[in-house]
Amino acid sequence: MRIGIPREVKNHEYRVAITPAGVHELVSRGHQVFVEQEAGAGSSFADADYRAAGAQILAEADDVWAAAELLLKVKEPIAEEYSRLRPDLVLFTYLHLAASRECTDALIAAKTTAIAYETVQAPDGSLPLLAPMSEVAGRLAPQAGAYHLMASSGGRGVLMGGVPGVRPANVVILGGGVAGQNAAAMAVGMHADVTVLDLNVARLRELDDRYRGRLRTVVSNAFEVEQAVLGADLVIGAVLVPGARAPKLVSNELVSRMKPGSVLVDVAIDQGGCFEDSRPTTHADPTYRVHNSVFYCVANMPGAVPRTSTFGLTNATLPYVLEIAELGWRRATAADRALAAGLSTHDGEVLSTAVADAHGYRGFADGARVTPDLG
Ligand SMILES: NC(=O)C1=CN([C@@H]2O[C@H](COP(=O)(O)OP(=O)(O)OC[C@H]3O[C@@H](n4cnc5c(N)ncnc54)[C@H](O)[C@@H]3O)[C@@H](O)[C@H]2O)C=CC1
Ligand SMILES: CC(=O)C(=O)O
Ligand SMILES: [Mg+2]
Image 1: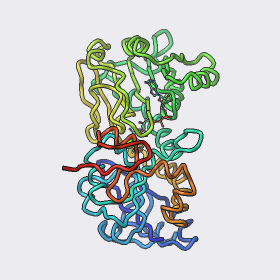
Image 2: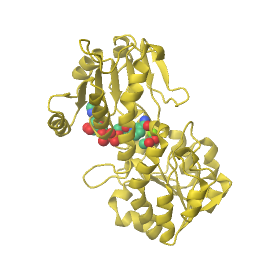
Image 3: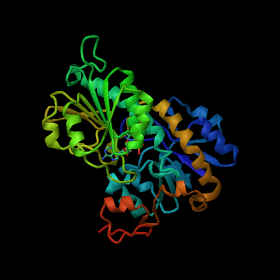
Image 4: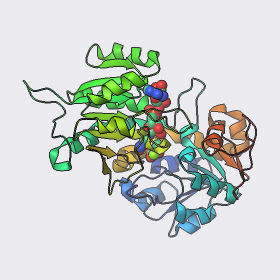
């Protein structure tokens, strides 16, 4: 199969969809790989590294897209890329379509077959292609929060770990899944006072067992979220309902009663965000104020640590890329239900219930296809 790897174009996105080792694996199995010039530069991979692994380097993004039967990306296509979408292309990338009607409609209009990394779902319910980036974003969240808690960054002027004789920062993590657990690990490591809220008691039990009193676990409901948020210096939003828009757990009114200079990091922003006032920001301009609090809502947090993230991403995606390359998307999704769960659009139709629901597309019944009215 012909596989294309363009350079990412989103703001401060330095990841690339595959490492040279991944290219080597594909080429050694007889596939052709086309990499855009400098695509790996942000992750410290030179064109020569890809060439040595067997890739052909192409100067123009247009040529990479045109050469590809299967196009691997990191982030969803953005407006300047929509014209390159086409019906005989399989696009495999993070899509977050429930949060973007514009991108959904672009894929539908172009009749592209799109498979979303973040909804590939293993039989146990886990999300193997979201997990590595949730690990990265979760580990970054206390780091970003700690930075913005500094008075010099507009925050409350609280040091995460305090000092002997002075209280540490109060850190509240909403959602104890992959991102939440990784955020907790770092926040505990920084000696903060950490509380994790989740609906899933089994998750909280695991955390309680692992940390043996070094963090608190609380079942999530509106009352407990309010109590926790009012006491917090730093709130990290890390909830997920797979494929769907994130539930809004922190209202504008609640933020108005938070401590002045408190910081809210919304990791769940790529699914629409779990705070009422969340809107996506970029690494170039990551924060804004709501009442007296600082909101950080960067939708591609792992893009800031591209070298780590590109390895983590390729480790997870390569087995699925190989399935698609060897079998074609139809046979690959028929053979692997985890991969099939990632199918989002095909031939002008939405194949995901959660995405169709998020955009109110009419006539969608679970498992059926829907042709939205793009009117
Ligand atoms: N901003 C960024 O750069 C990145 C964002 N993400 C996002 O982070 C979010 C979390 O992802 P994962 O940790 O992998 O998901 P996960 O599925 O592992 O964990 C989500 C957790 O949220 C819990 N939850 C759902 N509703 C809740 C509620 N009302 N109250 C409390 N907990 C609730 C679930 O029980 C689950 O434990 C996703 O939206 C994902 O897309 C992931 C990577 C990068
Ligand atoms: C998961 C995702 O969207 C990201 O890593 O940017
Ligand atoms: Mg994202």
